[in-house]
Image (cartoon, rainbow, N blue to C red; front, side, top):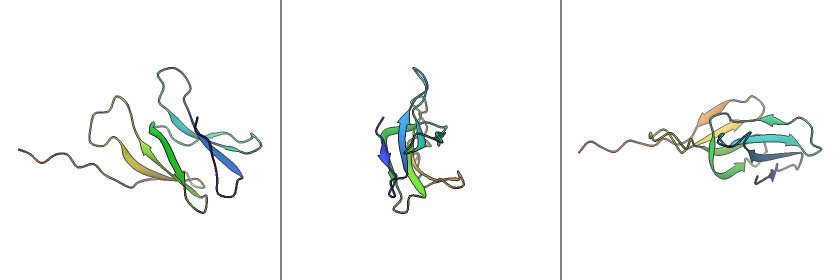
Length: 97
């Protein structure tokens, strides 16, 4: 679902889920269909992600439908060369009343 070409048009990132009820994940594939790789494992939401201008990273929203904590629905960025993920935003719990 929702495929997007990398800035240099050598790769395509897209959303997919393995089965009914499974979390939606981001996958990466070369434009010739080779080297398909799953990038995320924690689930993603909103069917939106963006490539960095140099095509080395992808930013996305981490989301689990069963997670009702303030850690859910935060922005993450993944380095495609190393697989390293960094959290970019944090949800603060409401102040005590």
